[in-house]
Length: 88
Image (cartoon, rainbow, N blue to C red):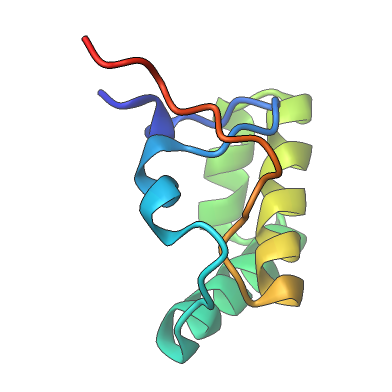
């Protein structure tokens, strides 16, 4: 399983996002992110509560912050460094 499916608290650009680095997020995807943000802000919702119980507090906060940043910037992350892995 690719590490892009994790909820690690460290700010890493996941493998799948390098191709989209700095690109605008589509209106459809932005709408989905806004819905996710609203779900995460209300942990009484069943889905958010189920996820919250499965990850640590630090991972939860990192997830919420990532979603909020994506919604506010309307762009995929574009870090200043390019930590592309070496070829095998």
